[in-house]
Image: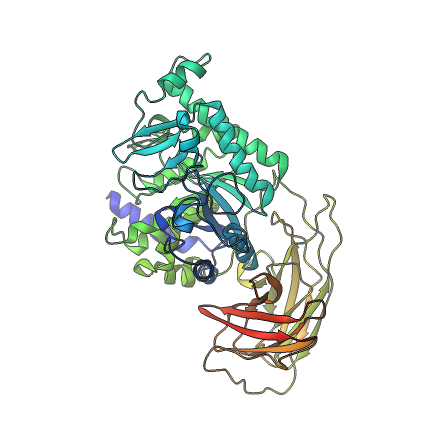
Length: 590
């Protein structure tokens, strides 16, 4: 009877829930042990870049809009110029070197932003050494401050002692160094604070030195974590108030809460009290790792609604175990993840979905990638707003006009002014309805494009001759507040319909003329529509210009490149559309 009721509930959820306009859709990109990226410790910078782009392009097609990139797996760094040595998972041996022209984190930020994705930097605040086989550099904190280290397990596994105030200050300094130097969208922690293996007396001396008024070592440990969470939150907001802070705790807060749920819990086993963080508003979002099925002793359909009741105005993005679709893991059916997403969307209880891990989706385990693209994430989603960070919308674009050329409608508008909080638009959305329907900016199905940067024009190709279309454009600021719409524009497509010739394969043509001074034309052919970027680099790989960064229809396309402000020399231009990537050389000769 219970199983029949559950099946009925899931059927009702799939029928009643529609794809929301706003939803946080993310994937954890794990770098520890090269789980997701880089694919090997021995990959060159060129290969690392190609692998990163392949990941991002797939997730763009999946309509995923955020990446949680692990940048500090074990007191090491996936970025240049930090306070800790470069990670062994990045350079082969911890403390090795990278080309000064390549900063992995900056590369991921730039490429994610080109695709309209947020980039959240994922830190492990205390994990120091993963195993006895780990590469450890002489400058690593476990070598320079051995008195800060707790060791447990046969591996041995090492972590920084969370009870030492200097340790908390050290980890905070590492995080804030990244916050200050990079244009990130968020800081993210997973669930590694005190070890899952359990604490014995490893921190008894620390407790004796720093316990203050605490008599319970468990309460003291929880307070250590709570104080650190609060200090990270407050430090981020004092420097960059718009940078989001989120934590992904273990999915069970306390065994028996909610009723009927049992098992290892974060509160007692690893001393994490996520309810405290929410009550004190020291996180912007929470992503509990609810890595269980609907039904059973750790029932997803009980856990997720319970977490919603604890939010205190903050966001819940569910952490979902897509990796458990694998036959070598739990061998879940693909429908389990689909059902969990549908449950999230009932009454907008969870405003997002975070998959562990990236490759579980991109490897299309049990067709989950196909399902997301064609069903659950069929339409793009805007990021949820956080009114406690910013609730002032940008001003709307103005003077929307159009020019019709064949079956294409070329839209142009003017940028709105500066809002009362000093913000201007960062990107725009274009909505379209075909007469007799009217434009409704609440309808996600009417969004035909979300640009990745502020722009003043858009071409809507492939319209039906003789049909009338209605358009509006809205603007968004960096925290995704949406302006009011432009005045509605009605456009009737007239002219002689011509048969469109669709290329048979992807092609990036040699620019013409070549050599050139100062302008040249670059043409490319797309046999299928897709998110397309065309970027120019100098000979050492520095970005010079982004010529195309938008959804392009199938067909032949040409763009102009002007090098008037550049020095003579060899330049590279690179196209990426779906899985197609090609690079060519051109020569600017003045």
